[in-house]
Image (cartoon, rainbow, N blue to C red; front, side):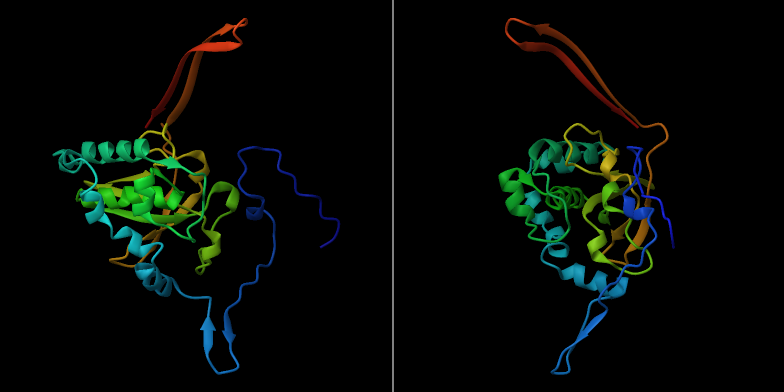
Length: 247
């Protein structure tokens, strides 16, 4: 190709540049060692499902519901109405945790330590949410995904480095809710803008994993209203801030 114009992003709502630039990506398939051992790196989703099920940073972190049952108010898990029960748990996790601004699905993830400290990564916060929802007998799975500025993950085969984020998929009475408890000011069932990136991989460890579309609700609303009075002498501002999120 010749005389290709520079790629410039002029629109702030554009996805990652990597989604629009034609390129060839190389990935190590396998390494044959001198002693005859083969290390395979490019695998099928079935292989990934099996590995993640027992992985200490993912699968095993989703089996801690007994710990959470003993460390939260009993009433939180026993609300008769399923949807209200889920909303109460979501609000509890939002209030309890502070996000440390860390992304990623790899690295050390310890939901018990994060819960005790009240601070954690995206994975630790949302896996804690999943544990609590499952402890309350609400079917919830982990979705691996990529943020808008990280690019879209490849669907043809697993490239785990494509994923840098995770959210919760909750199913109640035939209705699906996608949840992310890292933001204290986003309502139940609404995802932050960074997570609206078309699709993610649902890690259903009792069955096979599968792709799931991530879409913003047509009627969703995020509105911020401020009414301020400025005190010039004190160099301060006083007033009210209203943040409204609606499905």
